[in-house]
Image (cartoon, rainbow, N blue to C red; front, side):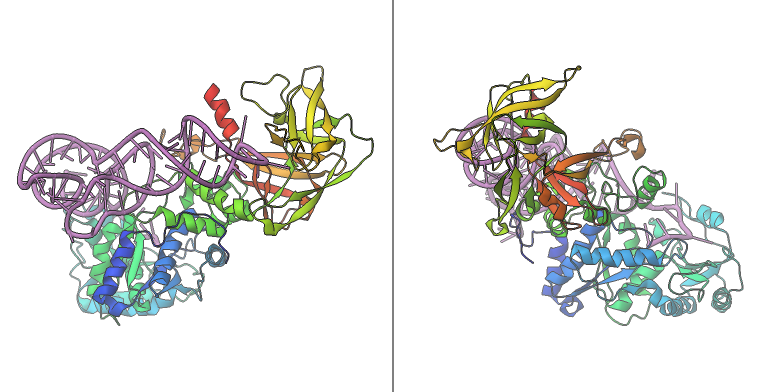
Length: 561
RNA sequence: UGGGGUGUGGUGUAACUGGCAACACAGCAGAUUCUGGAUCUGUUAUUCAAGGUUCGAUUCCUUGCACCCCAACCA
């Protein structure tokens, strides 16, 4: 992989996870071994937040010569589907990590079951037949101790019998649960006899109808880690209070090897973005966006379609580091990494999004000239391309002002600008419609400036892009703004949807140089002076704006207000 | 209400056993430029608060404050 970017050189930036793993290796913990896992639940698509987790999980393993497995946390048959499994594998690979053969928590259902019997036999688990509400009420509250279940001291033999019959499918959903016998008085609510198994007569995406008994996350996770030989189980901050339970289970089991250790770090949040799967699902259900790969979404599929390079996302994730502070990164920083990368890799093309006609009045009628333009000034190896120039061109509507404001230095009556890679032209006049809108601009060109330079060194303040009307091809361009106008969606009212930007997508039909017709699906090019645009990977002639160029002129305008 | 976690410029992340608070983005000013892009130079701005220990505290101690997480048979 060639790295064209100029990302800041931050080899192995310090972070506490890295320090911790390094210290473990130093101390010989786990025999110097490092193994992590990335454990998504296959109930939705991966998003930018997962990208960070993937980079941390796979990255740490890679860095220390360990391994990282992609493990599906498929303990809840109600919401999980194979469709998501495939998409997740695909997304991980796209991001640049090799998931290998994925593993599944459901691979361990039998072992988990055997361990559950072990816990019952040793007096650390029991079958309870109270309903969810009762159990919840008995759990007590913050500062209030819990009440022990009347079935807590049920005979191990009786629990075992019940548990086996639960497995055999003798009982309906919710009739019984298996609970850990921990401590109903514990300050940490997680330890107040948590549920290990619930009965669900549901079809599981992998085990089919083999089970009606399904383990909860807490009961499955640490044990799966132990079975696989995970050493460092890295997860997000909200599992902090689960760590005690994670350890509790492991300490009460005859483990095949070292006891894995859980470490929590802050998940990635971005300004103007939501990552809640539920809310993302709602955006789609409500028709606010067009699907899981709508380029306005933070899903990996959407970002990919929008033209975000995977390597730029990885660099961003590496750069923001790993900490325990709840934080929200400015999306502008992510965009900086995207631009920084694309600036070096994306070929340049000219496209006019809001065209007005420019007539070169002294151009020989019918004459066509072929100009050679550089494909990427940042990379000579990309070579040049031919672009046809004629006396009738499309230029961008905002590149002309009949009545210029201060500091505007594009085309205005009497001024001269450069048409990129072609000629200097001087504006001689313009026409308007009855409403006063400019319909056509007139100019003369200087034949001595062919290629874009004046032989006597005359300077020009601006360079604008253009397309010959006779050679232009139509392009559909989708411009995207932030989906949420607020930095923290929902900060004001509690409901992120109150901050929805209903005009986040604008589709225009623009005029582009003919070379654009041959852009491959998925390829990202820079429309000169406008931004980076990704050719849709299905719909021909459709371009998604990946990200705009930094716009100093917009800044100037804002300041003058 | 009990427990746990976290507080460093506008944002995010660093600072080895206590020794000039740094890096990036953003901002501002300038140079340069065939993209008002890129590049280059300069620059503004930071240790939650109050005490204490110390020659010296982001770091150690005490007290307080703020924010986040935990009472699903979700993960």
